[in-house]
Image (cartoon, rainbow over all chains, first blue to last red; front, side):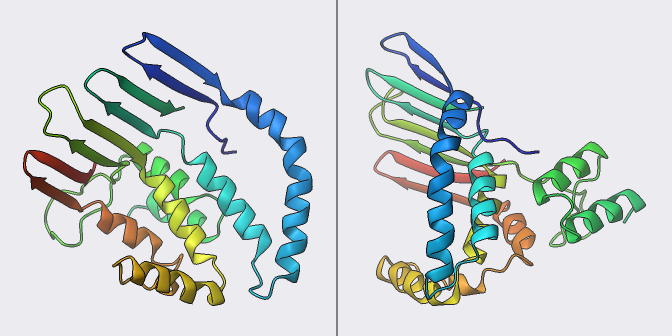
Length: 87
Length: 139
């Protein structure tokens, strides 16, 4: 089973600020909120003239979210460095 | 092609495992894909990340951006693009054309996805202008 990013590491060097964001908690909180949204999206997909294939699109979106693991962004400025990594 | 590799490819064809899982399995059995553009050359390992490096002209410590995106995310994105309904393709093509990119997204098929990502692995873009450098490559 593939999982979405579980932790985001945010580091701001100038302020010596380092934060580990427990994304898995956010996902757990979001699931009950997302269920009605997904149901609504399913209805819209069935009624839409373009005929979105809801199942594959929902699965593909989830897979894309999961595959963001390993993404790393570093920005170095004159005074501040910011680093964000998804694990 | 060894029996193990053939078995993994069959699992992908039967949609029992994802392309990324297959890549991991191929790595695990130590069989990187051979490069068809260079016959006889040793096989090259599949790239895992797309890197974008931007260096500003503000000296050694300023204006530097380093982005690392997993290739598997690109695969997932292309797979999503292949799921778009036909009516949407025209709108996207038009928007891309207006932004100077002549690309037909309807030609993106899940079947030739691996080939697309594989060729992306050979991509290297270097742009240098007034001390500012942009480099895009796969590793």
